Length: 386
Image 1 (spheres, helix red, strand yellow):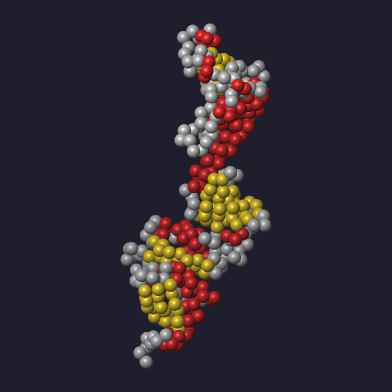
Image 2 (image 1 turned 45 degrees about the vertical axis):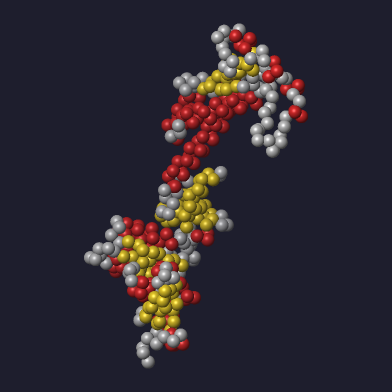
């Protein structure tokens, strides 16, 4: 690879991947410096310069000018008595190593003045030491650096693209499957949909389009990690935003969502506009709007509940489809409520394996204790007054 080819390759990389050219040049200079020392057994101070305009690569060796007249400051490495160097942890000052004069990295002032007459102590003198066959080393190193920078750039682009999509709903194509996960093609990268995060009972076909909720975006050593879910309660909220324009526009607000994926979800909605029917808007004419959501959920039931500032009313709504409820808030601070229901509605209020009351409690943020009339009387409560 000659300098023109290298410059052309960098320009193409900058254009296609959007990488800062200085990032590439600096990485190349560091990599080539290491490559020079490795391939040419050099222990001297060297640096590699790449001309930003032409792409020319040159290696320079540099030495620091020191004052050899102060003989006591300079010793050969073999002459140092390391037993005199203290490493006592109790000493307040750090131990100081004696100065070691090394002709590979140092020049005496006398030697330096022969090259640059007005040079001073502490200055450096550089000498080009570019090997004739350094182009071969440079080409191999350039390839490695370019590949690394392409990967880093693509990784950063993906992270930038998806970092603000955490908690959002996206569509992808089911691309691969293994024992534990589905791998979803999201365009620039893959997302991981764990089989624990799919809706119980649903079947996912290879090559099919699928909606997924992004739960986590992370940049790790292996590249961007994008975790997906279809069981997260946020999946329901984003589906409603997608299918119900009034929610997306902020006319209808979602107060909370409680979900038992594959079984039932409760979502509480309300509107600050008295002319808007939040429940009717979510259901749609003849259930047209909610039908699209239910289709995505593979048979999971969805209760759209009207939120109310009055906890008693809200709890009544949340325990639907149960009716004829008597709700008492027993402790506002601890958010505890006592609900009495007739025998016909008791099983509906509690739900299969307690699922309905459990979801209602999560939806309202109240601990709900459901009792029958007979159980209430045993607790000393008689709402009928008999």
